[in-house]
Image (cartoon, rainbow, N blue to C red):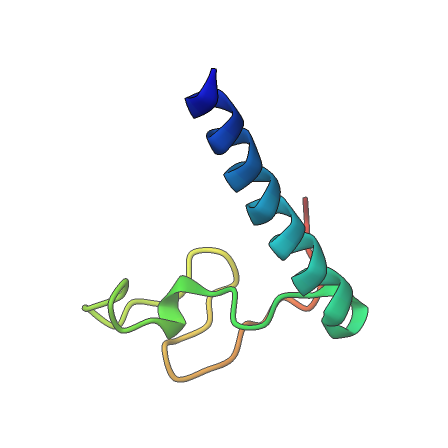
Length: 66
């Protein structure tokens, strides 16, 4: 039971942190959502599968499709 309470509190803190980040951002948008912007995730320099941006470009999608 103690483990469940600790896990529940930690998950709650994580959700609160995400909510605060969305609330604090302008228009509630996350910046740099393309995986191609990360050299750790895109070692071959391929374009983003979501918007087609190359690693040296910003994300081309300005609004979420979900």
